[in-house]
Image (cartoon, rainbow, N blue to C red; front, top):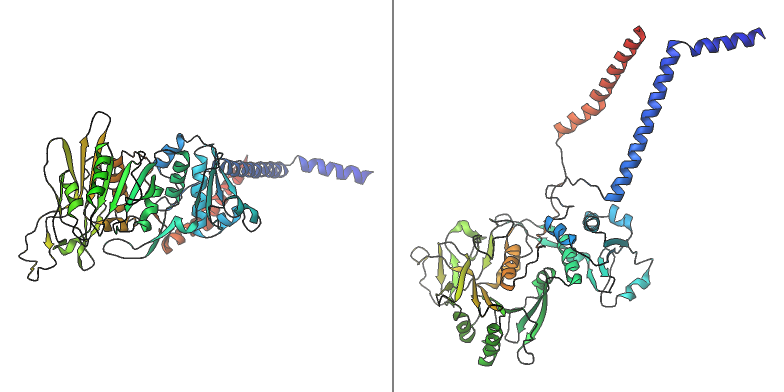
Length: 485
């Protein structure tokens, strides 16, 4: 009995000692602190998953979407699914390309409640492919479909293309078109800003199919048209003529003129290597667009690309309505094999604009000129792109735009050049196509957030030595202070 009372008394005394009180208080606060940290972690994790909160530390905001896309998504009102073909974990933990597609898709979906994301593993759901017989669905792609069964399929191969660097440093790199492709697929499905476009063929025109997807991705619904069997339908908003080898007949020209006189739009791509086209060039001359024989060459080595005098770059004039909204004002425009082109004043009824021109150090090289000398050649500036406009009446306007070289299209997908945005901006003004989601490709070769050896040492010393030591010192000071009380 005495032993029990003694033990009870010792326990009671222990509970009233300062050390026990301090230890209990310390343990209580530690437990509370750990609980708070745990709860904060749960809350933060929930918020990140629910609201897709991310911090993009890449140098070119690789995982973010542009303000143009966000602006478009604000008014998007169709129930649409972004179906990523694969498991979610595969996209999150797979290659950098899959992770990029995953993040861009998540960011697009987070901007509009009408857009949702699903994941379909084709290996586990083989019958899913049969629901979309018009597409060759493969893992790693994105299928976009709305509640009216309008669909677009984006294979992974289409969303990442190869680029070869800037003008003076032809380094290979991979660029992303993921945001552009998804945004324009949504625009296509929504039926907004689609330009019905007729691409003329049947005269040996240069095939633009390698770059046609760039037009389609930016709202141009391309359709082939052969005058031998087709007529220009009333819903055609733009005609494209791409450097034909054979001249157009007078009947063909009459059809084009009739279309233009009803307020149509025409874009013509020339080439210095094409044959003589007197009928077609006579039509263009009615709008003040004149051509000469030969090829434009650059005599200033600083403007050349490589060692070829017929391949060089120019800068767009951003003081006109065709290019005023280009985001990168000084991006070089790559041109090659330019046919000499210039403006001829017709009358005040036709508004003429020199959209882009070469430097003043260019000259004309004729094929049969064997005595050509760079030093003594006559040098001047030549038009690269000309835009004209003629008002038919209060409701109809004819627009004719001419490019002096079709090779300007071949560099549209190279992000270091300005060809892509430049061409689309010119076409947009020619057709009154006011899409707000002209999106430039992003380089996938951008370096990750990196730190050097000194920074690693400093950060390591900070978290492994300074922070723990500081906490220990503060704890010791608090302990000594409370012990003296």
